[in-house]
Structure formats: C-alpha cells, structure tokens
Length: 124
Image (cartoon, rainbow, N blue to C red; front, side):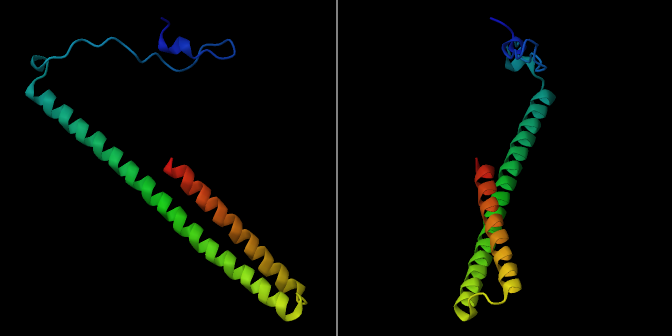
C-alpha cells in the first residue's frame, strides 16, 4: 500500500501533504510515569477546552448573523412599506426620494440574504 503522501497525486506531481501515519509502539501503563500521565490529562483538558470554545464561538457568530439578518429584514420591510406608501400617495412623483428608498430597500434585502447564508454555512 502506498504511503499517505503518495495517495494525493495530482497533475503528475507529488502532493505537499507530508506522510503523517507512522507505526506506534504499544503503550502500557508502565510506559508512563506519574508526570507523563498528568501531562497527558492536562493536554486532553486543554484540547477539550479549546474545542468547546471554538464551538461556542461558532454558535454565537451564527446567532449574531441571524440577528443582524433579522434586523436587515425588518429594515427591508420598512423600506418596502415606505415605497408602497409613496406610490399610493403621489405615484412616485418625487423621483429622488423613491430612488433613495428603493436603493436602501435593495441593499437591506441583499444584507438579509448574505447574513442568513453565512449563518447557514457557519452552522455546518
């Protein structure tokens, strides 16, 4: 069987991914001293804590994106409502205001979509 680095051949050249799979010597409790066991436990706690923090931060970031997406959705509905009221009142006679409100509404709608798409990608 080829080594790990040889499995990733692409376009006729060898991959830069190093071979990281080596044979491990058998481990027994007599192999470790008391300090080595404490070091392994401390390292395991550090890795677990780091994993928890990364997961929690990803969750809070996804929540932040969803909240901002909701706020932009509210602003989009507000802008659409303002355009509708202006259309009903004077059929968009004030072109500059209609263009400004329309631009605001489109930008807020875009930010809404981007926020929810990013939140979905972050959760995966």
